[in-house]
Length: 395
Image 1: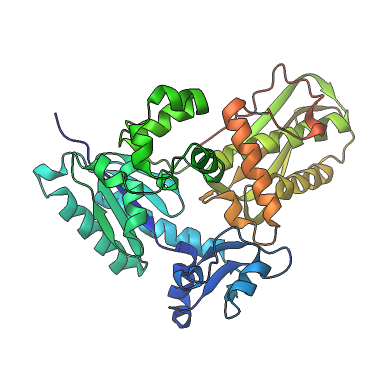
Image 2: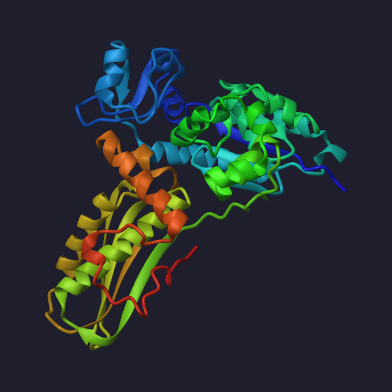
């Protein structure tokens, strides 16, 4: 049986690197993408800025206090999307199976390549090709699974690579802080610290049952990852084009309040889906079908986002422009298109840190307990008996 060989590739300080490619004068300087005002948030920053303690999701005002020489760049998501596409195309042409988990992060299944080229040699050559053809710095980790490879990439940065040989996963992970395990965030880390667990080695030695009783199924997953066990497979990359949702009513209606609430609910669902799959939308459209079957749509281009509070006003405005015949309505729908890969919090350049944390908390709850566990109050009274929020998903 062939030994699994999984490569994790991550573009270093991607947004900043793209800006430096456009403006070489920024190279080597403390740079932050985002806003420096009272409500501005750092979306990404250079390694020179990180040396001063600046990090992503930090308020821009605080970042400027830590690093007075910090250069703020507004950010251009279209250029980031194009750069990501350049890298994706190179990978797509070079390997048989890969997964794109965000605008700047990839997993590649290299299993079996040792028989032909040598896995490490081939991955190194692929990295060099990406750097040569795009001018963007890139790091990678190579091991038998996703978790160990991702950790290895983090240790290889900036602009390097690290190979963890088969059978060396546990000793490689053992001396590292528990926060190096991808699924362990700040809150979980604090709970582990209270238990006297700071290094992955300690986590490796603990009984799985103890962690499971303390953290539920996540405790079992933590123990497995700490011991270098991760059997998750590569999800083949699919370039999704749009997400849409429609509702055809059993009885035609003119209930504007209900219709707007339904459109809000649809938009919430689609935005959650965007964030879950690491997409941003650049265009939103609304569709109305009247009782006489005449169908009308209207769309508008928007700055790339997956944030409900930015898209819902656009959807409402489009609906109000469309609904001008004062006739009974048979169907309404929302469509988000011109999708690009990216995390929703990265786009919120002018939003406060608390807004970002709110979305992260809502998405965590909805992923864990089911969609619509947390939602806007205005959508509570909607009759969703025949409503499938994703019945119009397209690729």
